Length: 212
Image 1 (spheres, rainbow, N blue to C red):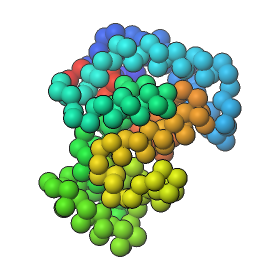
Image 2: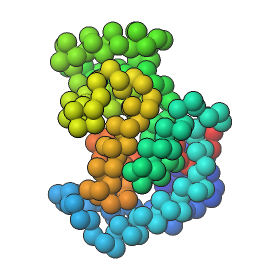
Image 3: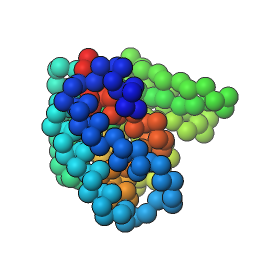
């Protein structure tokens, strides 16, 4: 990851911070133990410091210069759940490139599909089609997975189609991310947990640090 960041032109301040902590992050993810609700205190503090130093210098480097109309929802839900808005912004950009209508799924042959419908009506129609075929899919700005939609619809009081609305999608996504932070502490393990894969760390990291 360190070499990839260097080759791809990472923001110098961010890269220096990442480099200082890289060995610690690498050690964290080399431990494939069963996830604990109480991460080791020292590991949490050390990796937490990475976020504290990284986020102020990242300045949303990979994100568009213009502020999206739903930006206030990021701020509100992030603050409500004590999540750094920069992290949530980076996840949104990684997941959907800020497209509220994005829908993605993996078919039975293992091929990944990412679709960006032009209208909400088209997005709802595709969503309905995927639901009827019992296909697992990811929906909206933060690509909330359909399994989480089923799990959280009643507790968070929303209908699945509501996740095509930016603020509702971000409310649910923030809740899911908060679950991971509570489970793993403020570490990159929690970021990986949002998506369910370790390679996801690299993508989010680049969107925090890369100069475009």
